[in-house]
Amino acid sequence: MRLYHGSKSGISGPIRPMSRDHCDFGRGFYMGTDELQPLTLVCGYDAPHIYTLELDLSGLSVLHLQPNLDWALFVAYNRGKLEGARGSGLYERCAHLADGKDVVAGKIANDRMFIVLDRFFDGFITDCALVECLGALNIGDQYVAKTAVACERVTIVDDRPISASEQEGYAELSEGNRRLGVSLAERICRERRREGRFFDEILEEGI
View (cartoon, rainbow, N blue to C red):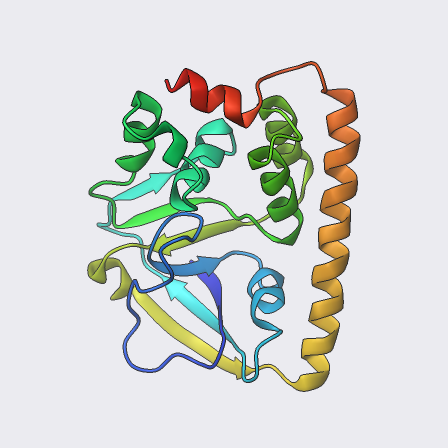
């Protein structure tokens, strides 16, 4: 499987599941199917690199998340947004969803979807609007190696530094994608304003 990874200053040493804790699918080594996504993510740093990778999934335990509310709630848990529901069935389900998995795979919260997710978490759009946005936006998938065993299955095919001129262009692309996400969320929110539940209502139900 051909995937891509963006690094702020380049990979040093062996690949490890050592991202920040509050990433979409928790701590791990993140790879995506869309090369532009990691490029726009790291283009603002001083010495970014884009890596082309190959991932061998044979023999690994993989959690495949569908583009639905469960995906959004798992992202919410990993970003620390479910603390208000701690102890509930909802919280426990999300907390243990990836237990025992080597890899978690699902849609990526790219520049467009990031804005939509924040609007959902902040109570501006419902779960119905969120799921419709997931279907409407052209977003790729991400694969997160959660264990050392999974990281050993990642092979670096190419390592390319990103030039200063490229960085500027990708920064503009990232901002344009964010504006598109805002526009889409506003349109779908108007169309679906009376359908579904808001994030705080889901937390209150806790199931």
